[in-house]
Amino acid sequence: MIRIQDKVETGVDSLDKLLSGGLPSGKLSLIYGEATSGKTTLALTTVTNHLAERKAAKCVFIDSDNKLKMDRVMEIAEHRNSSILNRVHLFIPHTFLEQEETLEHLPRLEPFDLVVLDSVTGLYSPETGGEEKTFRVNKELNRQLGYMAELAETTGACFILTGQVRSILNFNQVEPVSPRLLSYWSSLIIKLEKTPFSSVRTLVLEKPNRPGNVITVKVTDEGMIEASR
Image 1 (cartoon, one colour):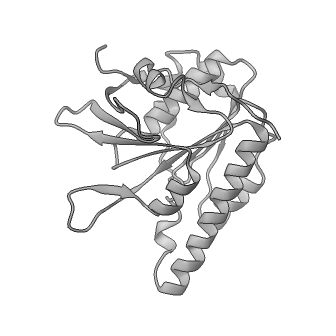
Image 2 (cartoon, rainbow, N blue to C red):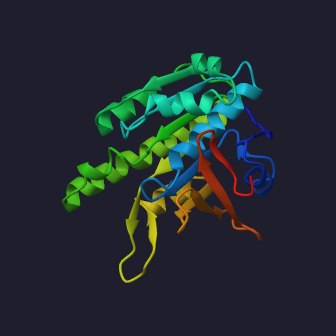
């Protein structure tokens, strides 16, 4: 079993400092928030920064939301080196079953490779409905998460999951879709929140919870950056 201590830097200095160096290799990290809060932008910023730093690394990007805009990918990559996109493998499943099959047939993963699943519950939500069906789909989501956790640990790859949200009844708050499963399997959880300023986001490190776990970042042409820049 591979045990990797190194981290995957996101390229956002204040976030990497908060994370004691970056996202953990060999683990699942969850980034969740409302639509257009910057989940995909943070994931792409991490991917392009990491591939620019590690010349042998590759990224598998699973676009389960089918919303990835290639011009946005190019825009972020060009601020580092657009040739790194040659090491990005893109998959677009259209059903929850196809998502499962994609995960089971990933390219061979090595330590410090990246796998981005954007979003982990994008194809799961429409298929829930009715107690029996909901139980069945939850069981499959749990199986997929467990499979990814095992794969991350055995290969040393870093898995980045983005998650959609749902409102919490009687509270003016949101939580990830299927919060218990995602919280159980994710070693690290980041919440992105919009602010009154269009490009500014509040980033909250929910797991692990530690002092100073709230920072401010900006969404720009080059990806996610320090709010002070």
